Length: 88
Image (cartoon, rainbow, N blue to C red):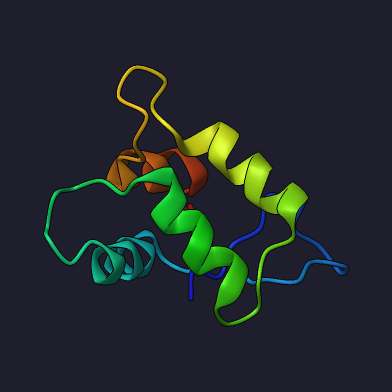
């Protein structure tokens, strides 16, 4: 669903990068209450059980980069902005 990896992109990469807007839309599907954030356990459950599941190590790496340390939630628009690079 999300189409990105925390590993270096290259010949051995599992995922191709996708546009920032599509990533945000994917998070918004999970955020059915339109709060602008997800609880870490919500995302972990989805990412480890659906589609091409993340491994525990991949999930922990994602959560360590995405969870707001003060609020203990994932503000996904900020996270996506941090993880994507604009192509020039």
